[in-house]
Length: 86
Length: 86
Image (cartoon, rainbow over all chains, first blue to last red; front, side, top):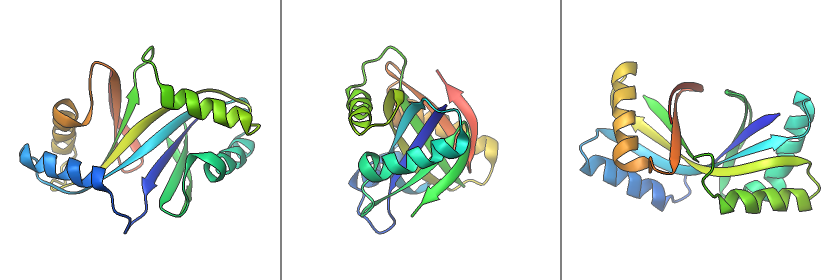
């Protein structure tokens, strides 16, 4: 089963990459508000069971993929958001 | 209107970050196949028109957000994938 984890800086956490993107977009003439930059991880899981996949992904996020002090994450299976963690 | 651009390395392009994540997940005991790491940009657009938003986002991706030689992107408005570029 294919899954995507979207990792974003928490609100209130400084995001210099996002600020740089925001500033550059404005200089290019785009009318934009705040921009934030995060990362994504695509991972192919051996299991085809949806609940098992979500359990594994949650564990991966806690152990390796995210820093819960400063980041939040969202898990997508296919194109759908299925779980969020603050 | 809030939009998210998901940027991924193209197939065949070396992704050392993804390889590191894949290897670390296996060492942690997870049964995973390939992992790939990309980035995401959340941006708040002034327009509320969907077509206008997609036009602007496509232009932002070409001019700043992606490197079309080695990356692909997907635009999401809300939680839905609405456009992809090879």
